[in-house]
Image (cartoon, rainbow, N blue to C red; front, side, top):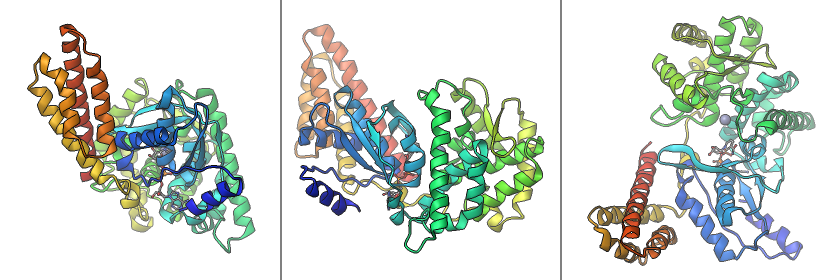
Length: 441
Ligand SMILES: NC(=O)c1ccc[n+]([C@@H]2O[C@H](COP(=O)([O-])OP(=O)(O)OC[C@H]3O[C@@H](n4cnc5c(N)ncnc54)[C@H](O)[C@@H]3O)[C@@H](O)[C@H]2O)c1
Ligand SMILES: [Zn+2]
């Protein structure tokens, strides 16, 4: 979308430009996409310390950032985020990742960029549904740690969403100024909170408000919820829970709910029920070292972590929340709340890659399943043969298999290699299955 401008910039400064274009949806946040970037890096002949310029939304910066983390163990990169989530959230962290085997961000790294350039004019072209996603993260950070920012979101809610944070033509200066304050403070708060905890050793995290039950619930509806909506449901419910405990006054509680509603963000969903709360609690206890650590605003603008909430309290708060939702348009359900092809779509040219990988994995699985030690040595070649004429990723993956088989020296090694080859085939098949399941979702 911004290719022409980028080309012009490089031309103007007489710099050579090599571009790897991609349009990634969540389902293509995968190893094949990661490998396609790695392949381009090799093709471009990147110098050891030369930084890769990564321009795009959180998906692109996560996948390309991970490619940079892995390439020669460590390759510099510069991040230029183009979405609200990218600008105020993903680019503030040092995390990079891809999804694997139906798990979000299962493979990744902590890899800080050399620089991050924030240019909010990218928001001129960002669809409103994506603006809302970022708005939800800003409600999160402000309601738990910066009241003045919450006040600004509350004052300019509709204008901010309708004008891409004051970047659209004709937006009032006042809205743009408010947007700049909100974003600067939001990022600053996140930096203050997270810089001492870059590797997430500390588990009481203010920025996890809305991220307690939502990780599970986000994927429950037949069409998954957009991230901003999933966390808004969790935040709105958590606010009701805090209000039941008198940690949040009635006025503050309503202020938060009204803001979600005005922003068109979801506060409830029919499948956000007792069962999801129980399952979500069990899942998050594992992630958070056995404690719930549910962040709630207390009072608005600061935060408390709840650990001692039992099933009865959770469900009583849920019943009350659903009652309150009857006062709101659409019973608290949001606008454009579910992912569409712009969120989930494959890379433009990825379908053939997926098919090639599926075939290669299937064949590798069959071959390895029936192999004895000696044949494994040839296994690599067979896999190689089976992907002749297919695309670069399948070759790349099989290149690894060849590499492993290339080390085979004696019988004991052969057995070891057989295990490795089987493991690889299984991994590949799982990966591809994950992909296919994902596609079905
Ligand atoms: N690393 C982290 O700490 C971190 C934090 C938050 C989110 N994330 C990750 O970020 C991803 C979500 O990122 P996102 O919300 O930015 O979505 P995204 O990258 O999918 O972008 C959303 C959509 O907007 C389009 N787009 C991007 N910039 C545009 C622009 N300027 N104009 C028009 N269209 C544009 C994209 O093509 C896409 O269709 C998730 O995978 C999530 O896991 C990572
Ligand atoms: Zn989030």
